[in-house]
Image (cartoon, rainbow, N blue to C red):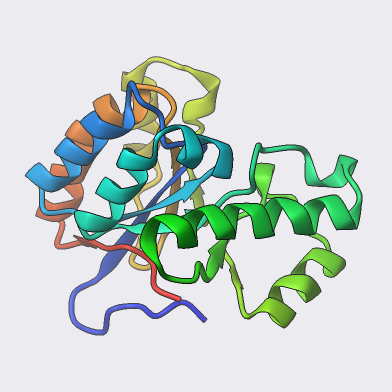
Length: 191
C-alpha cells in the first residue's frame, strides 16, 4: 500500500528508465531548486553504470525504485527471466543504498497475475501511474505542458516521466511551480 500525506494534497512525480548521465543530474537540480521530491524507477544496468547518480538520488531525499535490469518487454520473456530482472536490480539497489527495494514498476507498465503474485510473495509493491506525460513521444515541450493544463492533475496522482531525455526537465521547470502554486506538495512514494 502506498502511503499518502494527510496534510497537504500531494502529487507523486516518477521517472522511468534512468539514471541517465546526461539528464538525471540536471533533473535533480531542478527538483532541489523547488524542494520537490520524486521516485526514480531505475534500471539495474544503468545503476551499475552510473552508481554516483543512484547514490545522489537517495542522498537528496528521493526514492530509488526498481524498473527491471535492462527493460525487456515482460510479456516477451519467461517468468524466470522476469524474476531475475527484478532480483538483479534489487541487488544493485541494495549494494548502493544498503536498503531493500520495495517498489517496482514493470517496463511499459505490463502486468499479469504471475508477476503480481511474485511481487506480493517478495513483499514488493507494484506501482503503476495515474497520469502519463507521454514524454517518450518526443513532442514539443509546449504540447506536453498544454496536455497537463488541459487535463489538470488531482491530489494523489502518480505522474510518469522519463529521465532519459530533457523534455521532462523543460516541462517540469514550468509545471512544478504551477502545481506548487495550486497547493500541491511533490513527494516521493513510500512503500
